[in-house]
Image 1 (cartoon, helix red, strand yellow):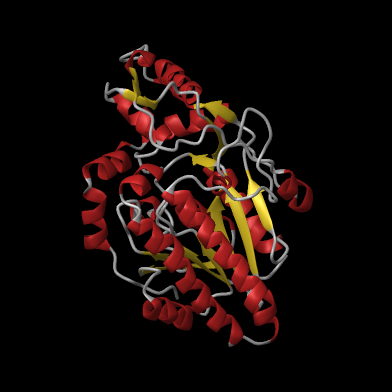
Image 2 (image 1 turned 180 degrees about the vertical axis):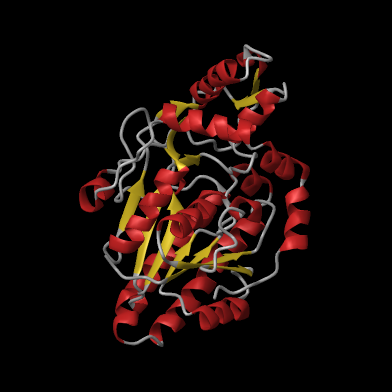
Length: 358
């Protein structure tokens, strides 16, 4: 295991990033630096349980700002970088791709250059142990047919501005490793779900709409298939790859939980019928809407490499993870209200400025 004392995490106020930070601060003695621009999807309330830790630092920084990114590296001197900051909503990328190109491509380039400069100035074990961990998506591979799985050797065929921007960032990371020797590892994951998920995504949107008696929109016939991964299982995998992954390698992370979108929504409805019977059957709220352009039919990941090489496997099944997720949203109405009302952004302005860990 590589000894790491301070981890810089971009996008740490996001869904997956906040899960990673909570695990680091609750389960290790690492110091972590959260670098986040705080776009609409960045919510520091998701870190309220750990943000008072003396091992936590927050930097409100846009990863496209080269001067500020360089300052963060200079002041914090991280032992590793986990790059999760990204624009990630496919629908938003179709209606407005510019932000995705800027953040996901140029932002990754800016981080790579800052990390390269930082790494070049390290010496001895510090230099040997430094890692740049790039976190990406299975959407870079395009769409599968009825059979087969994405592997680390699957050719890239992105079909949306979002996936194309992430594919571009993957290629940049690979190029900086092969051209400059920067010590990198890359992971591509399947669809995440779990607590603290911003409610524009399918699972939290359906939970909250159902609770409030609103329509449950499903694209097309609901037969698009996704492989679902519980966010805490993903966070454990990311930490493992950072610590033990082979330099220059890619690891696919998936839950082996293939479900059609309709199955996902129906399962949520069944859980809500049991836990919150008011309004049951919630499935009567299902509404079919016009499919989005270029909607990939099926994603499914072969996670054999990370299982065989690093010993990772998910702890949650789809049923156990989804039940935990529904229960969390029912029990955390303050967080939900803050997000749906937009008050979380006012809360951030009133309670947080850049601060350093001791």
